Amino acid sequence: MAISLVILSLLIVIGLYFSNNPLHHTRKFMVRRFVNWFPLGMTYAFLYMGRYNLNVVKNALGAAISKEEFGIIFAAGTVTYACSFFLNGPLVDKIGGKKGILIAAVGASIFNGLMGLVTYLYLMGQWKTNLTLTFSILYSLNMFFQSYGAVSIIKVKAYWFHVRERGMFGAIFGTLISFGVYFAFDWGQAIVDAVKLNLAAPTPMQSFLRTVFAVEGSKTDAVWLVFFIPAVILMGWALLDLFVIKDTPDEAGFDEFDPADASSDEPDVEFTMRELLAKIFTNPILLTVALVEFTSGVLRNGIMQWYPIFAKEIPSAGHPFLTEHWGLVMMVTGIIGGFTAGMISDKLFHSRRGPPAVILNSIMLVCMTGMAFFLTSSPTAVAVFVAFHALSVIGVHSIMSGTAAADFGGRKATATASGITDACVYLGTGVQSMSLGYLTTANWHFWPVFLIPFTILGLAVSARLWKKLPEATRRYLLTVEQISITIRTEERL
Image 1 (tube, rainbow, N blue to C red):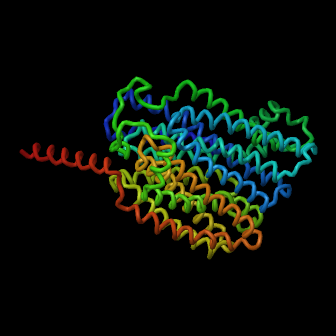
Image 2: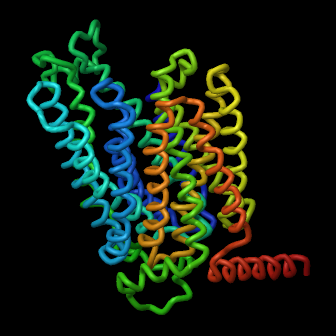
Image 3: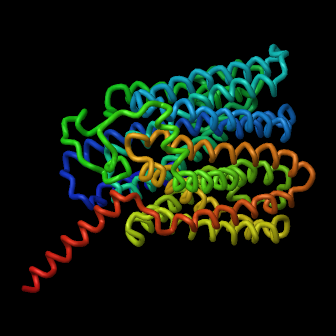
């Protein structure tokens, strides 16, 4: 059933993409743009599988990695990820998104392979070096290359999508994240289940995996395949990306068009890396977006990372459906959240990105408060709050990093702008990872209580963006409105 729902969701997303054409692009352009973003987006989704598979491995290895040690490893990776944007954001603005996504996929593939090798040697009793230190180093290097992914996909988007279409692309971006979370948690857990040493009555797919990877001859559960399989998949997508992705429409044989973002008001010159960074850090709107994203980093991973661990430690408080289909739930709610934010922005608020962030942060505040009251008394109530929280936080992230950063940074500085805002997401992730690793060891009730202040901060800061639009977008909307008024006047005459 799960895979059918994934395919259906993907078909719906593709259908919504082709049905949303406010600028009346030609059919040929729409098809070529799909051919461009689909493999790029799926590469990004599988980067997520090679990022959050660490969570699956932590549960599979049990006491070998404690919650505190897991928090340290994850925090080391996320802080590395955040700091990397100061280098790769301006770099991707220079080299283009195609090269950036290739760097991301190949690098993450290599270091997932190395983490798989360490896991294999550890389970075979041949790895004597401190496992926490080893994983902290390898996971950090994995995350360094992972950080090229988001800025690359948004860099390519900036040239192919007009501002009036970017709410929809923000929804697609949120969908890709959601698919990635599903691949990481549900496919990752399916791999763990398939490669157990004494598996009774394996399914045909499980038998196929066990045969291909010679699991039957192993001395222990082949947990290392949770790293190896994403590594192989990423290499496959990188090969496809090499041949089909084009950075701009003119490279694919189309005329360039003005997407009406912040770069529309800038001279036709190339910025230096120093100028790109200065452009972002002197822009109060982008700094506000970055602060909203810091809170979303705390809130997104504060739930996504810790609910499976919570449900495993306190089975009576975990909802059976969520614990069994965590990735699927995150996928469905994330898709709904991404499209909700994008459609609210483009359809109701004329491409303003602040209003959906305010609305969704308000929902998260209700959810976190409810979790604090019902954490151990009502698994169903907590499951509902978690689902709506996941829906809301992916919506905020997709409309901020995936859309607002590109709008206000402009296509020339899109990678730098989205990189800095995404860096703040992972600084927030690092803060919650280190904090909750220790707080939840003391008492799980500290979990939602720790997250509530960040929800309030995100709500307050996003409210400052309510009326903000790039000047080029504002002029475009005024022009469209004037044309509409003229047409209506002529029709009346």
